[in-house]
Every structure is written in structure tokens, then in C-alpha cells.
Length: 68
Image (cartoon, rainbow, N blue to C red):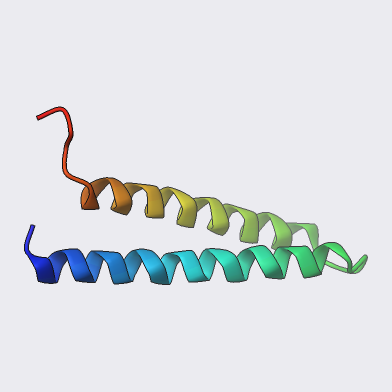
């Protein structure tokens, strides 16, 4: 992997982490509101999980394979 690819990948990971943190904060603020739609909360939680999985996948691509 070239330095440019690694840098782009690192930036993408940071962007996803930022979105993950924003969703986490939004979910916490929604928890205090009794009028929040449960379906909306469920969608946000699924998106948050998708982001977490995406981050883990990209981080695994960033790290060299240690078993080689």
C-alpha cells in the first residue's frame, strides 16, 4: 500500500469515527425525549453498528498481515 493510499484510508477512518461519535451523541440526546420515534432510534443504531463494522474493516486493511 502506498503512502497516499494509507493516508486516504486513515482519513476515511477518521471521518467514519466522527460520524460514529455524532450518532452516539444524537442517540443519547434522543433517549431523554419521550416523544422520539422508536423506529428512528433503531435506524440510527443500525447505522452506528454499520459504521463500527466499516471502521474495523478499514483498520484491518490498514494494518499489515502479521501472520505473513
